[in-house]
Each structure stands twice: as C-alpha cells, then as structure tokens.
Amino acid sequence: MNLKKLNLGCGTDIKQGWINLDSAQIPGIDIVHDIEKLPLPFQNEEFNEILAQDILEHVEYIPVLKDLHRILKKSGTLTIRVPHFTSKNNYIDPTHKKRFSVNTLDFFVSNTKLGKKREYYFDFMFSEIKKRRITFERSSRVFFYNSLVEPIVNHSLKTQQFYESSSLSRLFPAENIEITLRK
Image (tube, rainbow, N blue to C red):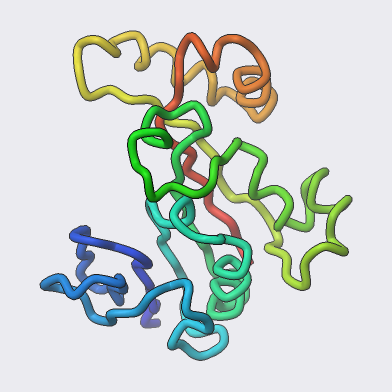
C-alpha cells in the first residue's frame, strides 16, 4: 500500500517520499502554493499523513485546519509543531500571529473535554489526539537543565497543564508543542 504524505509549509526541510509544499520557490519544492489561499490544491481524503511544522503560527489557522481535515483520509494523521506560548521565538519572529497552549487544539478534537463542549463552533472535528509533547530548547550549555525539565513536564497531560498554569512555565520557558491528531 502506497501511503501519500504531505509536508506542508516545508521551507528547506524537503522530505523524500513526501509532497513538499511551500509558498516559496525553493529547490526541492513540489508544489508552490500559499496555504492561506484555500482550498488547497488537493482532492478530498487524498493524504494518509500531513506534517505541518512551524506553519500554523503564521496564519489564521482555523480555516487551514478545516482544509487539512478535508484532504486527510479517515484515520489519517496530522502532526503539528508550533511554538509554545512561552517560547521566545513568538516574540523574535514578527510574522507570528498566534500563540499556542498544550490544550489549544483540543477544541478541534471530539473526544476531549474542550472539544465536546465546543463541537457546535466548528463543522469538522478530529477523532483523537494521538500524541502531545512540550519541547524545550537544548541548543546551548545555558539550557542544560531543560533535559531534566522536559520529561517531568511531559509525564502526563496533568503535568503539562500544571506546568502551563504555574510559575514553572515562566522559570523554564518551553520551545514548541508537538501534537498529532487523528481524523
């Protein structure tokens, strides 16, 4: 079985075996398209897997999520990486429009507490959150303690929520949220 995969807003992160889409004409890009110009140039339920890394914070993401839901096959997965609301990258990049919490995307998932309460807001819903993780910067010796903080914060959804609602998120700012949704 040939799985069809979309690398959305990939920039220079070209993946072999994937359809690589970006708004910039970069070597290796298969399709040049602005993701805010909807619908995306794909058929309904065309993809088994979609990767959207570092893209949703740049756009009005609700219409984009709806269209990604449209082009994703039943039981397909959408993996998203966005900056955590405490990330310094939110404030460094002037093109960032949105901030994200570990629960932000729960509004679009039918079997979550927030999703069940808000199903009437949206005409699309994902079936489950397959994985969610808060990541921390580890690029220098200054952040050596993040390798200790990250597994504690990601022990469970409750520890992630406690981290976000306490002063810990200000003492140890996160870098990204990685979440995988299943249609």
